[in-house]
Length: 394
Image 1: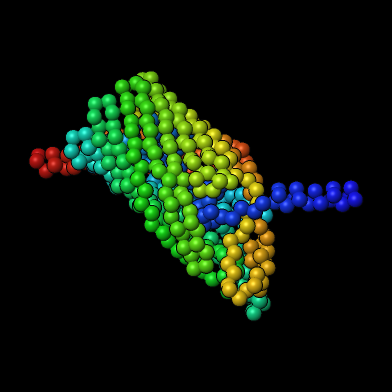
Image 2 (image 1 turned 90 degrees about the vertical axis):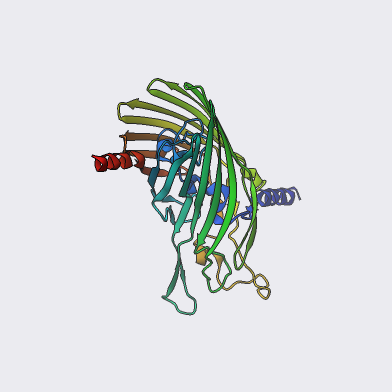
């Protein structure tokens, strides 16, 4: 009798511990996948530990803080962001996560009137692609269907900032284009292609203050509810709010920045923990050259088992022709530790007309790998226009 009770108790504990997470959002939009999906936009910011909320910059700085954005000429910016392939954090998967695009950002900015700066940019804020899923067709042995589930968060952003003495106020109006391709849903026979795209407009106000030596910045993106509807499954998703804050200190040629980003992931699902990103950065200028180093500590959001997104037709009665592991290669998902410790380095050179920056962000923990290579360049066109005008006058 005691043995039966003990066996029942062990089984009950096993059932309780094997709770399966039902995705609150489409696959790679779930917060625990940000360890790979997030792109660190802004090469200068990436080089110094992705700090920029409290550091005045140009159009490349707006996604951290639109108030820390200032320009005195017509400015054009272009950035490439390449992510190295890594094992899927799902321990039951055999494929790699890769990035479907190396484009980081394209932006232009100008001073519309005294103290008023405006800019427009296009950036890929998140990206992930699973390589790859192969399914043999039961009706035609030896023939396969291939799927490469892909997710990108593309942002079209209008930015504005206004300087008032030591203060600056700014706002981003961001049109997020959530693009899903080859989204795989188990049971959508015959393994249908689920491509869908959703547009969501979000606002990000910001604040910045500086006395020339000490600076502080703050920006906030409120949470947003949205229904992501595929042909088979509908997700009622809350996109988490994000708070960026920080302080910086300018000591002649040396800049020090300490910042924090709070991502309230529990708003997406109560099973998730809020993510805290602690960031430290250092920048040192010598003539036309700038050297940068930094560190980012990202806390874990969630670990455990998740269920494969599944669609049942009314006449399925719970029976689907394919077994789950025949499609995915695994019956369910198992996510381990996604805590990250990233070190960053960066280098920059600039002249009156042109500038070039490079950066590397590298996770040194190893459990949730992420390596990103950044290359950004900008041109200040006003000085070029002035030179051309003077040449014509002479």
